[in-house]
Image (cartoon, rainbow, N blue to C red; front, side, top):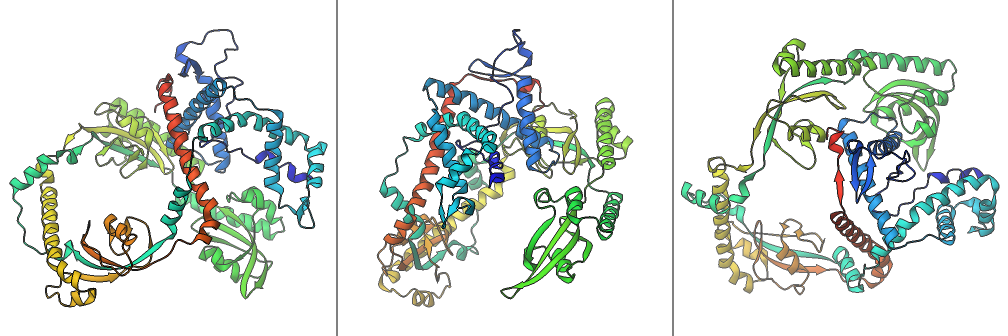
Length: 606
């Protein structure tokens, strides 16, 4: 029980919508040297508060350390580094602006606030722990004994310090969200939206039934449509790149060495070395840091087929492998087997070796990529490719998209930004991605404008044709409308349709939504399904796919008992959504009013 207290420093106080990075300076903007900062060493200013390059890099290093710890020490790509750098900047801006609001509102944290919060967090964490219970009930006296234990003092002081640091932001957030009002009618409406369902029969006059109609659209009609709807054919500025790529994927030699190492580890285990110690030292499975390779009991379906086949075929005490799966090579120590409720289970531990490139492979790829980049800048892209014997590849044209995507290569935000901030024929530095190193040449720039009519002529004609087909479908629906009004049997109407245009079907139960099963996006159909009296035929309803007549065959009632059970959950969902929206709007306005100067471009490529 005392030992568990030492894990309390791992708790994280989530009080804001965005997590803050713990900044590695005592006070942002303080000048401890007594010497005025030179502006060339500033990465930014927020309402006059200066952020130096040193401070920013300290915060970034701290954030990067945490991220690499979280991912098991995995190297970050250029794109991931850039994203993290942007997040650190946003967190710094947020922290400073919110701190100013806390000071403006004179928000204070009392000792009682801290004590209450720490106790509440601990109670939430340990209320169901048998060590803190008597006769199955939480025992406050036992809990108080642990709080008073001198050996837990440091952990509690750390928690108090964290609470004192973060509670002002929690109080600020409470003030911002105090304006959130959720009427009972809104909670009921949200519940109804998800839980009241309808089932309908429908008679369809689909546009697709007229697709064989011969409709000629002239170029002149197409041009008129193009001119009337020209904004739909706007194009953004685009760029196109040549690139060379040096792979960092594991070579055949790397793979052979991984197999060799797996055999060596297996031999060590067979010779009597403790399997858990080996897993602790050798396994690439992140969970090995806590379970030392022990997977506990598992069913056959719990693991990938190759792993399960090997584990379930072995006898207790056997060490088998290496077994290749999508994750890498496994050495498996089968500890025990049992049958539980008719299901066979195996208790096993494993050591995972991943097929990763060796240091020599990645080092050689980096060396060649840097050599290529230098040669290309001095002698030309094509000459450098010929000298090093590498193929030049080309991207398709692409725009400056928000997700940082380069066609065929994936997310490369910094390379995308380079492409849209460089002149034609410029050659980039080296960019690292998990699969290798890239160097780019900007080969083409097309300015923003409109796609020419000749390029989109067929699109325009097809849209005109679709509108005309829809008019034909509407006319047909109007023609059968009197039959529908007189005959409630949709199938009989379909059987009388000698042109085989219309069809009928029944949906499954569906909630209030603009999407209707078997029909698709159809707001008018959905609205009728929840407002039309049962077994009454609707009028003609329009959708993207044609025209419909419907009849509601069943609709579930609003269940008051179920609503009472779910009300708090629904309320909290709405509250979180509204609170998130209000906070975001409030903070964006705060940023707009602030004087934020971002000088990061002086120091970083993107």
